[in-house]
Length: 316
Image (cartoon, rainbow, N blue to C red; front, side, top):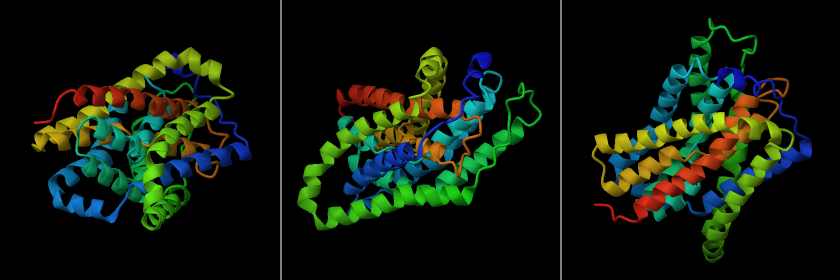
């Protein structure tokens, strides 16, 4: 597996300025859609359920990056450094907006889901750069003495630039979306569901744009990427479910924490990868690109599967 994944690492991300603008607009649209569902009372609901809120936030912001770090260490001999860093990048991203629909579909606590998604998204301006730098830095130190066949390169990320980018891409659309929902509530109610569907379509478009020049290579090595993302995503769901069980959360809340931990905003990860000020395009980022993009597709499939199974049984 390691030798095969080496074929992905030399890939450089060749993306035009116009293509980059399209990617940024897509993510901004997705985040605007998330903001339409955010209301101040949802944060009040989080305060009313402090135990579930704390478990949900720590599951996403701390335990998922921790579990991811342990996973890349265990798989050290089988994955390349850029693949590992792609997994850490995904784990550092906030929750994905589709998790709210999945929580509703699975008869989980939808209000808790919306509150957690909103909270992790608002906190992402700090948590995403911090988690990527901290856990990614630990991993780079771990493999310093490892023989990497010449593909290991210094990975120096401008955290200030990442913070700025995340704030612009998430903060501004969220503020506009919250204000729009406040002043145009009737229009907002009509827009929410169509925007959820469009968000999925636009994310898939984002992935297509990302692989325009590397589609054949993606198809050739998809089974390696598929297995890695499968294990990583399974552990993400398992982390949320385990914490919910350990802390004896109500069944509906445990379902929510499970889904929130397993559904990540990998679209943000893709946009960060395309930003030349954060990840210079002369860096070998193929492994990170493939992992981040496929995660965004796979977590929709896995999340809907879990939600479908839970929807058949009322929570106790």
